[in-house]
Length: 208
Image (cartoon, rainbow, N blue to C red; front, side, top):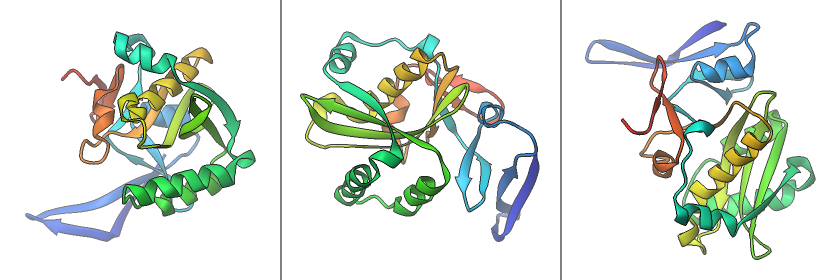
């Protein structure tokens, strides 16, 4: 792979130089890059960057009775994003507005550069969550999740990811990756059963 250092947006602090580094694949597969802790970022083109990536290791998932009961009350179906784009976009934009989140530009770039699938999650025949994901040959890469605030007891952030990982396991995928795991932005990801984090050299469990 080719490494690019973004010095135009770099800075110096305590006599140390800081800048973002990106990788452009040179023959590596998406699965190989994800295994090494890289995540795709749309510039464009698609660059890959190092992050505290997170994935679900199916062999390490152990669900409590409460969580199993919650998941049993939810149903999902898998759709092509292109076939339900308007409905999904409106759900996500409303989610961002209600929670004062600003990732619309990131969301729209992903819409144009990935062959996206949608997991639509319902409770009692009402849509309560959507997850957009990239279905690769050996793994699933979850991109964004939006969910209603009217079902707090369902912990829909965690439940959506667990349903996506169960779907990945049913397809024989090796892992389900769910992007970054920084606690200040994604605190609920720290509590997902079976989660492993990329610490820079290897994958470690959320038990440490």
